[in-house]
Length: 244
Image (cartoon, rainbow, N blue to C red; front, side):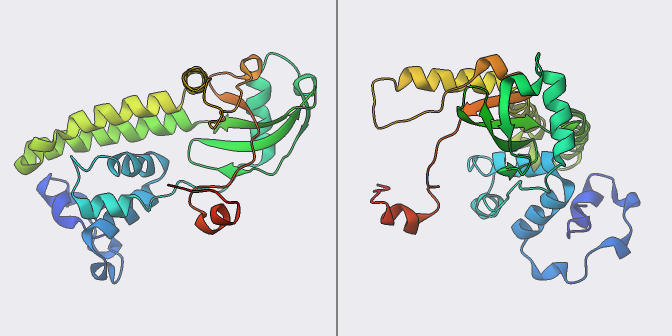
């Protein structure tokens, strides 16, 4: 995929050139800058590589500025799973019938990302919530992709000496630890609870409640809060919100 997006020279340096077929290169790929081509390669390689790009976008100490800016454009919105698959995950994870916990679950997702899908729901007691459900099989996909990343990092350190200062294998180690945290929703739930404790005396900060009785490592149930994304400057201005 990297060769397809114009990085044949890197593949040749790390002794993978014999696997390249020139006809796989995208026509006109040369018109894009190296950061653009890298971002395009990550998008085509799937969720693990998109996450890697997003992590690197926060590390200007490791990645040149032009790559950081391009990686900031990475989004992990993906096609939603059918609700039947989401329901199977919920039924497997929860220790009670769904009808006992929820009065209603909207089958149309609020959002669908690489690791999880989010649905609005109403608890049996009438509370509005959102349910974050981990995509089935995502842990296997991540494990396979990280194994590939370790192999590529090892080749880079061996055959491209100028990359050693960045410690490619160390970057993959740190990235893998980040993914482990992201795929364990109990850790996320506890972090939310910690934030609640830290800001309990600040009335200007509202943090959603976590419903631990319905949450597991693969399912997170949170209080639904209405709001305006910080990216929507005009809507914030109309609401009288000062972003500064």
